[in-house]
Image: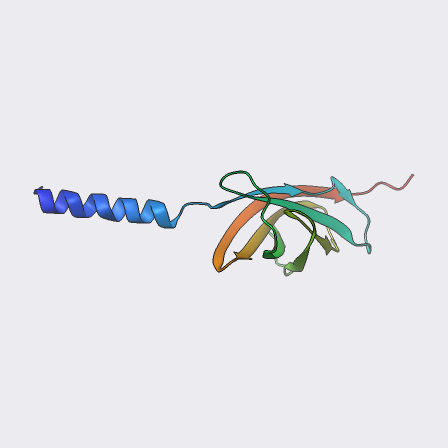
Length: 124
């Protein structure tokens, strides 16, 4: 392999690594259980690379039950305090879910996933 080819491959790898860098840290908080026909709060804490709260972002999430085709639960998240965003979801079934999270902050867009499980709340 000549020097030009090695340099070109190195450049492409650096470019790919830089483009896929995650500029946000997402901490997803979900309750362990839900009550049918009631809204369940879903909370995300969003931090930047330096660990500072991300304020003023547009945040939304689509919740999809893994292995089922019931359709997504879509939520627009509202900032309740610095870097903390909350949305409401109405779950129909307990199980494993994937939250596809979209963030738009000062023109920087990010799309990622977080997984969680939730069960029916047992009525006493």
